Image 1 (tube, helix red, strand yellow):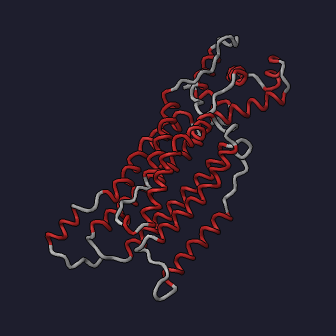
Image 2 (tube, rainbow, N blue to C red):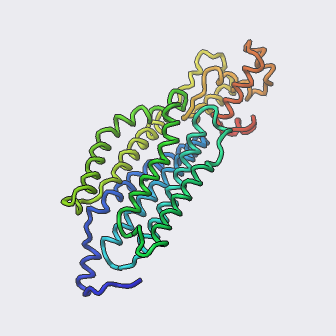
Image 3 (cartoon, rainbow, N blue to C red):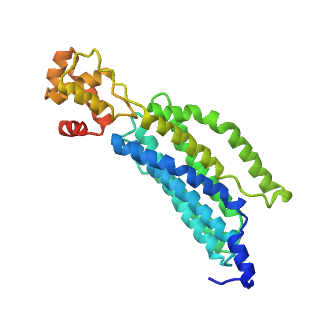
Length: 331
């Protein structure tokens, strides 16, 4: 990397006294994401719920993304080097991280929306459009002389941010439409989202439009990453409610006061995302006692198909695939 021709005192000044306001916003977004990632991982370890694993992955990618933006803004603000490739490398890294986070979001939406768990397919159309967008920006930057797109400016980042928001809209819209059927904690996120995000996002949008449109505001610091702070705070609060809340299986009065009933209650306490119903708890206790589906149907006065559906629901909510794994969950 080619260093600038500044004197040593001037170089040290720019190294330790950059415009801090430029990168404090993305750094704050990164710090806000750490509790959400940690809680999602702890919940996944406690419940064996695949949705929490995907949520932790997506939150981690987003936190890494805003951290890299912080590092990039710092390096460019400090002006220690004048390397035109620095922004291009940063843009490539953030673009790939953004693409990965969108894939995780699409997988998450397919998992938590009922009826789609087994129907998720790799988004070929979205991937193809993303590749075309990527190649178009590269062509604008390298196929012309002088280049029509300069990664040292703002245009490439504005275009990639627009692409990211467009990719974010699809799965978010599907989750919103299915908010009445998704797990309760996801529905609460969407129920509180507009109220929590509305005014802050509107003010941020007005601020960023003024910063881009008005020459007098060209030196204003970017506060766009603060939107991630609001999102991380909302997710953290909801996950904290799940982590400290107690599952309420209501075994009282079910007539299953056996040791297997206690094991069923212990297993149900791990199902935070989707609590077991009273009927599922009854069937779970009988499964742990070794009863077959047909015998359970006879004892409870249900049809074999109904019992089979309840057993499938128990396996889905607990993450177990057989009765031995169910019993292991209570240990």
